[in-house]
Image (tube, helix red, strand yellow):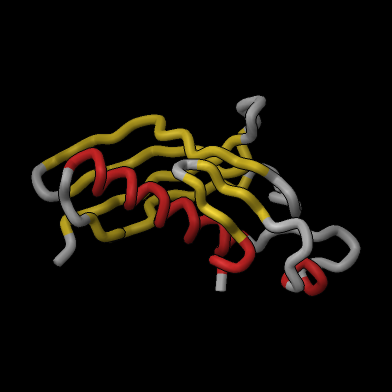
Amino acid sequence: MYESVLTIQNELLLVSHDHALFDEHFPEIPVLPGAFSIVACINIIKKMLNRAFDKNYKLQKIQKVSFLKPIKPGEHLIINIIKVSNASEETLVTFSLEDENHQSYLKGILLFGEGA
């Protein structure tokens, strides 16, 4: 369902202006549900890792996520990879979701492993 609310263009996350989801979450002050934003970040980062290392990565664990600012309809946000640490079969990624002024909306640490 998140694909109809969010458009992923390379590492850019575009939030729909007028999706029906915002009528319910929340009508007075519409914001993107946190689950939608973290799933989008996971998918973008996974694609970036797969391209960079020519492997098939799978999320193993969300180690930490901090929601810093509500994501409103119409936002254009960028995934910023802060650090990638490879250790044997695991890859730890520290990232943030930011606007063009480097204002952070979300920060996190994800653990990926090679998938089947």
